[in-house]
Length: 332
Image (cartoon, rainbow, N blue to C red; front, side, top):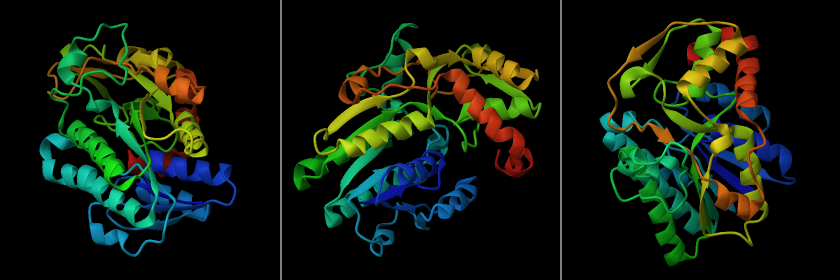
């Protein structure tokens, strides 16, 4: 079996490439990644040690696919994941996230390949998320019609494009609407990957801010360990012939949800450090106060659920970071 992972030197892509290489017999895994993101060159070193070849190409440019070998499956992880970046660099995000999907689909046609697409929980309407009760969760039928951010628009549009190609060209697909994922090899920022950022800042006694919604740190998210995501995708590959052309929410669910104040407390307990946390009251037009994935459907399909809780996620980040502080400093 030949698998291409787009964005294979990113956080999810590199973890997934190494995981699948270790788990599937007689598999040939390649990556396509332009190595433009911070940390991607460090992940590149990880995958080549596993004899996973990376094609240093941009998925937004169709000619970059012409010289690639034939694949049976493309796992499409490549994207500009920062929601805030999509406010300022609309053209770049559109090309990376939507044009990139178009180019991947054309490669699928050429190779007669299937596709697993990592979409996002940000396809859902912000207006409707504001109305969501604090103990509720979001299933696959939640509203996607209203504004969702340019980033969310490109991810939803990619989903629709995949379905159209499936209808026209009989491509088989799985679409995972992935919520917040964390774990080792995530180089977190305020805009994206904040769980990793929280541990890093506490470990190094650096300042943080609670941003938006009054600056009180009460925003809620659910978190999924990257290993749990990798295990699900392995199941999806193994069961692809029987389970395909499906769309599902993938996240940590209610049990793995927390707000920033709780994350701070857990980070303090783990690192034994207490840091200064500022308060910025102004809220981004792209932020939402609450999001928790309803993962009942994916559980039903694959008998899958997160095995690793929040403590495990934070501990794995901490014990990856602590012995490697000097190496990691330039990536955070």
